[in-house]
Image (tube, rainbow over all chains, first blue to last red; front, side, top):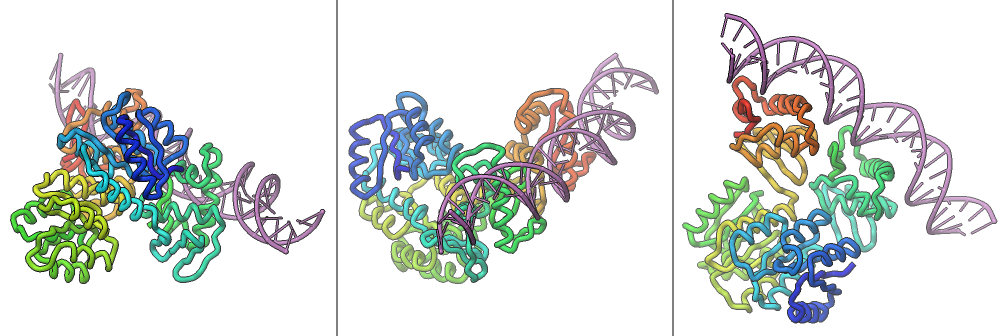
Length: 220
Length: 220
DNA sequence: GTTTTATTTTAACATATTCCAACAAATAAA
DNA sequence: TTTATTTGTTGGAATATGTTAAAATAAAAC
């Protein structure tokens, strides 16, 4: 997965931005149209998207909303449009920021660095007595070390990273296992079951790993 | 813990902002100096800080860096200074955004809502004592948690998002169930009925979920 | 190559939700 | 007032969804 996907039809600008970002140590992919952006994102994913609004094919807003359907990757919208409506629309679609062109490239980079730091530099995540060390892959529950298998760990990490959010079963399975055939959701159930045992959670009266009927699961 | 701590010495501006944010369902505290901000934050905490740079006592940047020592609460810096150096410095200190004065209050609120959604998994819609969190899929009625099934939740969310507007039954059914078999509107009645029970609404004298004869329903 | 451990599959079981159908009540039209 | 139409109510059947245990497979360790 590349760090940053730049969607920008101004070749000169995108080349400049790419150089600067690579100098900061990020891996960068560039596309000049919305369709390509979606394709590349579906295929390889990205940790952050810099999205121009005025694209040759589809509208940038449409791209934004399509990306949001797939993942909650941070999206920075870049545009020469200055209307308030455009900005509000962008935030409503789930964009993380709206930056007017022409922008100062140092500021944009500072913002990107900030997002990366807040979003991806976390080594330890925790919620309601459960602590996961993403580096050593070790887990503590209520202060006591607990052995988790790798699938269990990945699943629990995903749930804790999104604590409070009801996550669809398809999404959970997809993220942890990589594919999504309906029949395989049983596998997810089994792992949820194991996790609950290790968490000491009774499913009928779960306190941490809750089922959200008709949707999936959430960690609180 | 309050949701939002506003650090701003312009009383008029902070009062305005407070009103707007409270209308969005956030709890808000206001202070007019850096020392008070630190004190209040240490004592009660906050989920997000809106921080003015030009304060009567200490510099806003100093406040920002002190807050960062204590927690990684999101900080939105608001300032009339437009120098690049100030902005870069703010991001370097860990500020989440730098907003130039004068700002559009709707944009600021959109940004705050976005942060709450991403960070705290809180996307709230509410009307007359009923609050739905679209991210965690949880519901509160008059301050008490209530269990809703997924169809009930979707239906109520649709009604609340369009509060005050009478929605056609066909539209409601279509939106929630996806199909459009007109004959099955009976199903909608049943769900409306359940919702009214959970809302504590008597259909003969409904206070929230009203019947609009010949049309459908509306939430007020 | 065997043993151990982790993971997946299978299938039976348990539960919640949704749907349906019949009827009751309210409203509008005749 | 009567009639037709729309809306409200109810219980249980049908369906969808969730849980669990155990066996089968795959992967890793020895």
